Image (cartoon, rainbow over all chains, first blue to last red):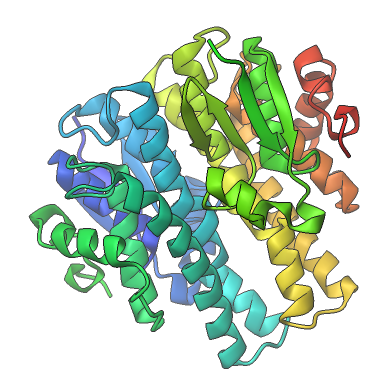
Length: 212
Length: 212
């Protein structure tokens, strides 16, 4: 089997999620850094591989896979342990809902292309951009805290690690970078503290990536 | 079995997706309209059922299910035919990626809460808000067209209907409402035209909902 290649950017939340996922499954991979600061994701070379021009993109078993949550699903099919979702249908749906709360309701509003649009096209000052970030991040984390308070054990959904946890850690890393207050989210910060101790999460941290 | 109850809003893209999904599976449901124009989703009554205060929310088999893509997964487990994803792992991943391109990369930037923030908090004029909408919608649809051009048959992924198709139709309905040009997306508009003929899609259309 050819080694997997992950096209990623060290600070991209979605890339960080996929690094955690690959580490949890014990899949060794080659990292190919795409520098979003210099718009390398828009280069002709990268667009030939991924017309959408986004990271992460995982090349594995001859497939080019995009969208972190779709990649989790694929990895679960190839390496079943540890599973990223519970086996019972309702549990699956609840875990997917937690993961999608991060992936759909928080992250898309706060990634680099959006913050740049606010600055360049809408001429917003940095204060207003920071307020934007914190507004959507806090609103989304409040929703996640509400769900997690009902369902969390050691991790976000009971005591078994899931893809919801994989989405949580990069989002809180990102929130802290932008000085978002986290005091109102005791369940999330407790679970995050437990997760960041795990080797698979620690090795995926942006500060631990070679190309920064 | 108690009848399913869908808490929805006729124009919400995510609600529209779930209506299509329920129709395709032949699951009869009671509709409970939540009027986003009057912020009914923030009412104490609704928040008691769904603390996140979003639509859609599906009550089924004693579960309260949120996030349209998580709901699709649950419906697939309860009523296997027609399946919303292919059975092979790579096919699943590609279909999920198409659906997530709509659900993560287009829709979250353009829903009502975001357009309202641009107006109320950032004081943007209607022209700038319309430009915002069309910018993200066009960028996301271009990515989807690029993926679909490689993979589409009769539908977005080959000749078998999938959750990618369920996400496409509400997004194009929404794009047209905001006068987004669609000439550059021939694959998407061709597939959309085929889909909207199907009874399950037609019955889910916003204009066909009782409470508008």
